[in-house]
Amino acid sequence: MPKKSPKYIFITGSIMSGLGKGILAASLSKLLQMRGYSVIPIKFDGYLNVDCGTMNPFRHGEVFVLDDGTEVDMDFGTYERFLNISLDTSSSITGGKLFQKIITKERRGDYLGRDVQFIPHLANEIKSWIRGVWESKDADIVLVEVGGTVGDFENGYFIEALRQMYYENPESIFIQLTYVPSLSPGEQKTKPTQHANRLLQSMGIKPDMIVCREDEKLSKEAKEKISMYCNVPFENVFDDPLVDTVYELPLVLEKQNIYLPIAEKLKLDKHKDANVKDWKKIVDNIKSSSKDLVRIAVVGKYTAVKDAYVSIKEALIHSSADQKVGVILDWVEAADLEDSEKSKKINLEKYDGIIVPGGFGKRGIEGKINAIKFARENKIPYLGLCLGMQLMVIEYARNVCGLKNANSAEFDKNTPDPVIYILPEQMQITEKGGTMRLGAYDADLKKDTVSHKAYNERVISERHRHRYEVNPDYIRKFEENSLVISGVHPKNNIVEIVEWSKDKFGFGVATQAHIELKSRLEKPAPIFVEFMKAAKERLSSRSL
Image (cartoon, rainbow, N blue to C red):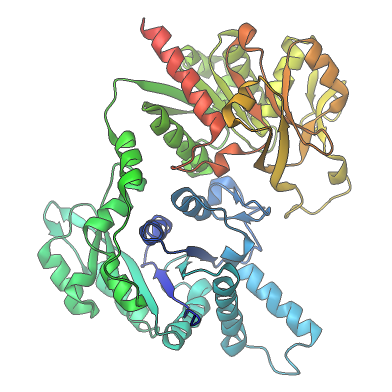
């Protein structure tokens, strides 16, 4: 059998950011996957950080974590949610990683006395990395998304490497995502697209396709202008319109036959049909209007930047589609629940479920604990994630177990009852990057618990990102007071999942892991599904 040739899709942006290259990349990958092709996405980020681990959520949004512990850009969450696959560190290229590799090789003498330069050494490193992913993953197609905007200093060298790859590999395609604004209905302006395309062509790249974000459907006249002035066939200019849910975009692109020019350039089977039936069914569940609208509060400390909790929002979409209900999602600033005046304006009673997500630092902690206490005392379904589990334990210790000054050693080093303390292996660490308990870890589930029922498995694996854990010295005290330890790490008994006694306090489950990170449209996070069921039940009981 002849060896298959490498096939690459390169996606670049425009002269403005935030157009949704990650969603486009995931959508195109999904359409190819629906035709039976194996697609592995790669994302390049130009920042000089080695990874996203030390970035502030206010500046960069959510830090997504892969099974192998790599901390990456949130676009990786989009890839995994669309493709229902787990990626690894090889799919994440940053400027920091590239320069680190180059300097390491230079210090080791790998360049044999040569002066090390962007061209050819850095470009060759990039090309070798991408080819290595294609070979090691045995992928049919590798899709590369270039972060940032066209013309940025920080990604120019990467675009040059892709230019070289394009001409070295005939079965490659360049796709540019641009924006076509409308000054008024029917008045679409193509100049931004023309200038963005001209800038890319000045770098030696003539895109094969242009995909246009717009406020209204691209007119024939606008398409003709883009085709004429950007040297792209009319039939290779596509709409990327506003959609009710991002998961609808693959279906929208499929209707435009976007696969055909890709198949032609990559020498794929043009007659392969996409199996969109199951995907469309789930998307219809999301879009369908429903009388059942559960109201969920996310009590966080980064609520000013919704991208800080994007995986939670998507996991709620997945689980609500599974349960065929709609979701009204409210962001509640935790610090407001510590202020007597502001807290009066926040009616937690109206919610069908409360989520306390992860986070770092002391700000807003007591507000989150107040929300958890309210949920427990009023039997409002509660879901805690990472820090949300630790605070659930603190609240329980204070108000059920009688340990009035219980706290985490992270927030109060002098607490008499450190029910949450630092991982022993973390005590000597001073550097911050990549030093937490990161990536996938197993958990043994206790039979006849909500968690065991949700997964229907004895041993599960979920992703972590934390330094502190439940202090094992207090576990007996918790269990004597009916707190259920429903999941522990099989090797060292680290507490992974805790639950309230359902008979006493209703639905309350919290996980040390970030279970939202592995939720997929086609495979929702099991505990999110159980949480949504409980929220749906509360909605029904309140409607009677």
